[in-house]
Length: 591
Ligand SMILES: [Zn+2]
Image (cartoon, rainbow, N blue to C red; front, side, top):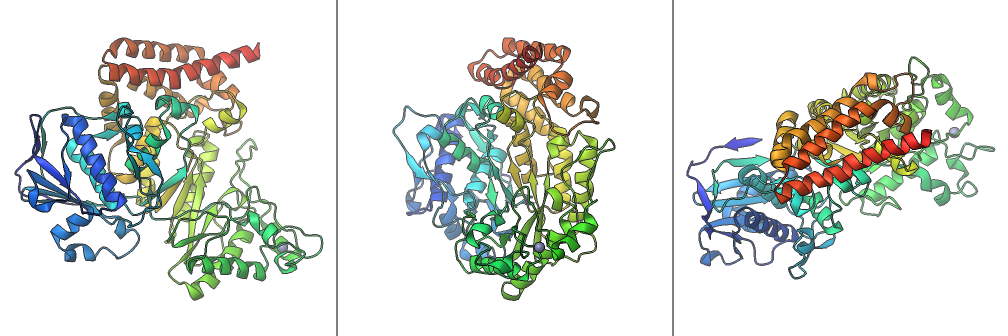
């Protein structure tokens, strides 16, 4: 990040309840700039009680002009911004820029939004107001001006977006808002965040107090999900239907073999053709890929069963013992039995793509039985890789060791490195099987591992499940700026969010985190996924639950003011009652 100190003269945007600034946007603003102006106006109103005017009349400005988006470019002159079209990551850079007596907030913005329409009144819990529908930017639309505004609100105005509902956003209330200028030019350190967003799972939904869909969509923008377009998931499951063996025998391993054959050159040519077509503008069939991505995904079907023809067996048989087992023989899921077969295939596809689109990538996963790095194979330079890490199971130490050893091999290469991270654990099994899990809080381990991602130049993370309020927030903030300290982020969260109840609430979080993050509390000889028995037989013991209950009761007594008592209530209902019910059900089921 570049920081330069400008003149130290402070800027007064609101003076004791009197507006001293105007938000200026172009006459026909992009939907990005439109939302950016609304958000700036709304948050400053929440802080000061004053509504700054939004105007497109440059000459009739009262007070300090705050230029947004396209208009900012006009004010600054084109030459300063023209250098920005230099690559997908550089294009994410945004500016908070101060001129004498003026503020400029801008970045690269998509002209036509691919996002959904929300009702801003509902999204900001102002249901008493008239409906106010607007289109928000899509996940991978460029929205640099919006990012500049959010960064400005956090960095200069003290706003903290801790959740989707208005009650979960922290505003430092004061009738005067004074800004100390400091130019900022930056982008998020990890330039892609996306995921399978489990907003409606019990823990997150409870902590957020069941927010509206519109509030959640707006919160995704406030947390700056998106960035460079990339999506990599299973892709080849549709091929057998699209290319049945009866008509495309060359894609299969011969008589008696019904699976796609990853030794087939013809199949590699077809996949490469699909990639080439995508980069020429064709829609990728059934894959729902983002627009303008430089990465075409090629991944076998989930729980893949591989062709057993003679050529495939030549790649599979020598590696049939490349399995990951704990000392006691527990299967650790991610291994290398199919790595050689799979990555030889990906290599063929990548070579073909390089002939026509040398600046594009074949993107694949390192997952399940092709998780291990395929030793002895020279992978093509135009392959992007995404190892899939279940970091929330890393307190099963053999499991952690297997994942991190292989991750290190992948990360040592100079190729685009993305990740899948499963924050769906430990809640997923509980959601599916209808029991309650012991929460997987682990902020301090997240700090350690995310700082490693930043050092390894990880380009993006797909969160398969988003965890809970604090771990999600910490994760996104550290992706954005890994130099931050998790202790600072946690101290700030608990003191701002719970006020006088911060001490027992932080102890509540920390106690759960310590219980979850202690390897002795996990069955190191057993499986690496949390089970109901593990949740309430090993982690949430009677004694620990008693301690947690006392902390919640203490917090309830201390949180008098309505906003604090409501936030404590969300945690009590979302986390504590959920846990208590889980343990009770476990005990009743046992007897
Ligand atoms: Zn085969």
